[in-house]
Length: 436
Image 1 (cartoon, helix red, strand yellow):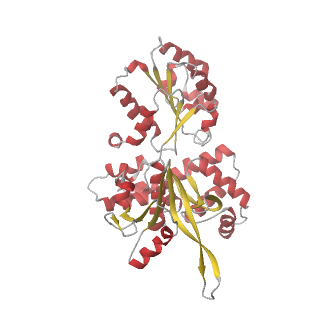
Image 2 (cartoon, one colour):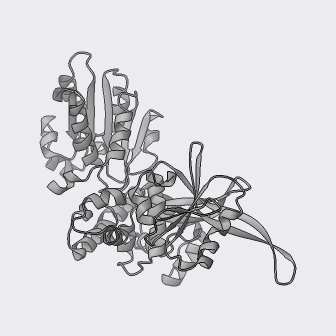
Image 3 (cartoon, one colour):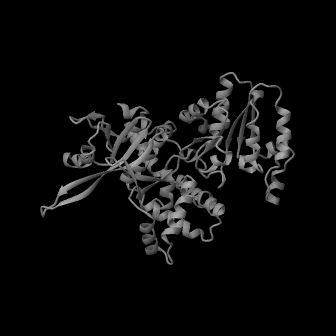
């Protein structure tokens, strides 16, 4: 695990540093195994020390550590046996002995959901002007995207993704960027998986995580009676990655592979569960010229392509869809709100009658006043294909920057219309690539 120390997570470290002493509870969320604890207890802890904070002013406590729990008189074996959480009174009494005077203390709490009534405990500590609080958690409740509401609007979320390709590549040894990207598309960016050398072991790890951790968490949280239905639905969603879909379409597909099927209403609920656990993300369609959202159909993308591929036993490795999923995740990592663009047009058909059509822009990425239109195309074999991909750009009739990202190794270039074409590896390895 020493190699894990070599993978930096600078973008998240900066986000934590920027939120120091802002009066809110910093809540580090993200899919299991994405590196939340490492970010908080290693990287951020080191940052505090390097910026002059004395070690005794940093209080770290892991509620899944037998050693830490013993400090407050708790026995992790007894807690497991009795199916109970840590006593908040014991923790608060221990903490009160650690805080002396009015100096600022940094409270770094890991797996905080294992503390009984943790929301009330943390809210009470917000009244202490000299406490700066950071928490992570990894069970099915804490993975929920609505966790911030538990802190009555006093939480500040830092969402951690699996490794970006740029982060992943720093852990690659003796591999070209093209080789590394091929591995990344297949096995994704879970940090532990990135450090496994054997493809067979990577696949086994991802399969075990998908079966025994991610989906089981959702089943436990929502008390689902038929775990196999959830697993089948995730397989259907995985097969449909980056394609327009909706609950009705998914229900029809589900009926074709399993009987009895699931209703569209039930599937809609299950998709919400998967989103709340950060396993997938829904991208709505946005009418670029009409400036309005279209709720259905939408696209679904996986938080990690390796988990998506594991769910399908690594059988459907379509590079075009996987690349699109990776671009979507990268844009979100960079802080953009990402939609699927729709450009309505009117055309004259072969019969001379006018008809309505919709052109698609893969991504409309917004951040503040910034907007980018982005098309993803694995292969651009000729100029005809390139013009086909760019046609929707022509019809937006605005001046926002328009970028075509290709799976081939293309150096960035700009055409006479101002449209930029670049390779996906250049896009991913250069944090400023959208501005080139």
